[in-house]
Amino acid sequence: VQLQASGGGLVQPGGSLRLSCKVSGFTLQYYSIGWFRQAPGKEREGISCISSIDGSAYYTDSVKGRFTISRDNTKDTMYLQMNSLKPEDTAVYYCAAGSLGLHLCTPALYEYWGQGTQVTVSS
Image (cartoon, rainbow, N blue to C red; front, top):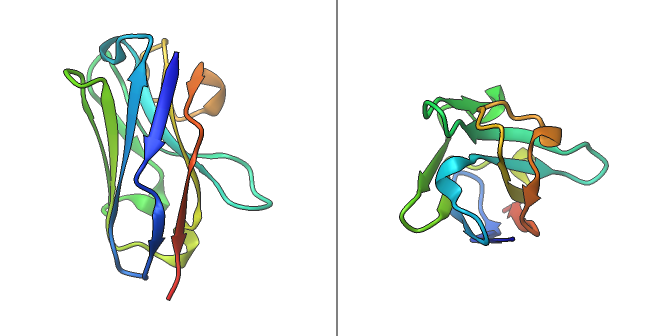
């Protein structure tokens, strides 16, 4: 099982990035997916998750209207489109997959994790 996250980098405030996460070793279609982030000195935070059961999505308040989570089951890939980025979005971003199928964004519910990709928002 492997999750390979990519797309992070340095971007100016107000800019955009698109994170991708390609999975292998299991069929993404049957798993809930989520994006999490962890800033230095802070706990890992669930920012957006999608249920595999009904497609319902969750967004934490700080990213609503700016971030969009999506999945392409034909490519076993998940995405996080991030617009209007702010310095407080700076963190290591992780993708994850969970077999419960729910859109709950609690890290403990996700069995499989990517390696993380750094996102830095700074002028």
